[in-house]
Length: 292
Ligand SMILES: Nc1nc2c(ncn2[C@@H]2O[C@H](COP(=O)(O)OP(=O)(O)OP(=O)(O)O)[C@@H](O)[C@H]2O)c(=O)[nH]1
Ligand SMILES: [Mg+2]
Ligand SMILES: [Zn+2]
Image 1 (spheres, rainbow, N blue to C red):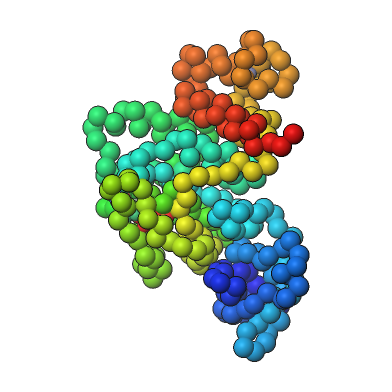
Image 2: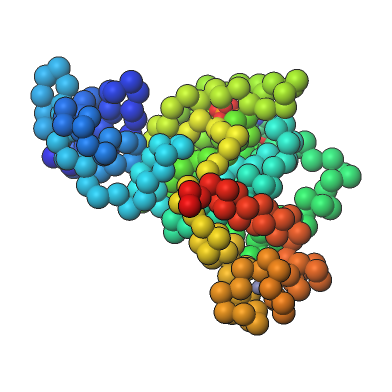
């Protein structure tokens, strides 16, 4: 029988049987412990019923696979960035966009806690928001008073596996609660002293919402570029990639090559400076990670 793994806590799996539309508790077949594949949330599995629990017999090939958060087979990612509390973090946003683009997963941007935007940062923020829209991303804005409604989010969720991700404390669980209060996820004040979340959500779990699946996941402070190199990074910055063919040198990485259209666009303000700075930083980071 086929099922999707919706939750994993301490070796115990919750499965959703696709044809029966029921929930089943299961354990993985012993042999999984000795192979590389440990079934994870998002996996499509073959299982057999049993007592006291069902047994996962086989895991279907994954379309994509993430370690942090641990989830497989996602179609799209809602990346939540708060305006404040924790601090507006475009570096983390660009890194997540980069990682999802690399895996061919559509990122959808949510800027949360818009109520904390002051009139002094309003113009700067709007320019940033417009920029991400201009390069092709959907941007959604939320506040406590105007959360994402079912109508707004439904077209995105239907028939897809989505993940909601972002730093701890940005409001991921609050957003899911606002869409469906039956989900009733725990949320928590962020630490004012540290200006960061407290990791209220402790595990990744898929919820059935608007005819699709969406995973709440624990927030994090760091994202790894894993097996990406400077070429894949340059291809995952979509607006750089679009311009790259007009650079003088084939395979230009826009670092210090002459007649580079990307650097020209940064200099004349067409490309957001923070995007370019983050790009250079990610390239440095992958070089450091690589074992020669
Ligand atoms: N001012 C303001 N606060 C918000 C908003 N959305 C959420 N919060 C608050 O932010 C805090 C953190 O929210 P959570 O939903 O727990 O954040 P999270 O992203 O799930 O955090 P982790 O589970 O730790 O990864 C809570 O105190 C929320 O009440 C918002 O739109 N505006
Ligand atoms: Mg949470
Ligand atoms: Zn270039």
